[in-house]
Length: 458
Ligand SMILES: [Zn+2]
Image (cartoon, rainbow, N blue to C red):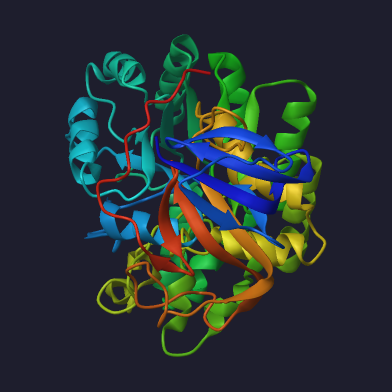
């Protein structure tokens, strides 16, 4: 039996921090207590360090075909970056392309990930084409441990479902013990505003944000909540970016409706002034929804504290500036929507959340690991440091710092929106099921270590 003793550190859970030793045996947490004197194979001195659960990032797009190109990280490079950034579980979006049957999509994503992933992974199924029999096929998907369906309320003709189709998917999710993840934006309004802008020769990246004003998100959030009431299904909003959306979710939750939501690292830390950078640099932050004004950022932080928003994910959807973002040089509508994030979510949330006083360290653990695991049928195996949990352990040095740069990052992309940022706190060591996968930001694990996670029903 392989065993590791983490001694002298501070264990942080979603509700408490305490000095304790942590013993790992055969990939699981075997004991937590004071002065454990186990005869472990390996001892890690954690004096002055925090021990937090490995991050759970429930929103990534690896090896995903989108907008005429494919995200630049595959399951090998993307999960390696996750490991180096303290994330030991991802739930990726298996994206159905038009004409593809849902079981085929899932089989394809299993093939993309198997033997390549460096950390554990699960899938959501993104439903974009309701062919005859699609609803019945969703049942089989749930049996395979894919207990969340994603739908898009934007991108008509590519990925969008109309309200009736959205209702059908929700109803089936409700019946099957699954939930529906929703990309909430009013796509039809956005498409018309965007066409008007392009007709006026307003084609630069900054008009991406102009074409998607806050109300396009808030309207869709409110509509989806009401439709979910009729369908009797639990829903989860991905990447909320606007104060009014968080308010709508809070109001639904106050009624005890099964509505939950996430925001993403970039909406908390970056602003729309980045769209005005010269030389097409604004394309680097063309992601959807767009970056918002400071009042929205403050409202999102506040919603994380009150619990209206329960999860911070990365929406890691990387496209290189060269050759990929450049597809939209003449028309912002053709810039692939997305940016990188899986590697820096955990350090940024610690530095910008905990060390600025916006979040407690327990809230940090809750938002980055515990609640995402609970929301997606992975708890307490993932997202927790408790006896019996997988030994996904991050050793964090609060006295260190993290500097973010495209030159040193592990993720496979030629830029980062946080270029040059230095934040307090440094992720020193990362363990996945007891196995060291990253040390001082370098990857020391191996492709194929990651296993598929069949997730529980709600
Ligand atoms: Zn996404």
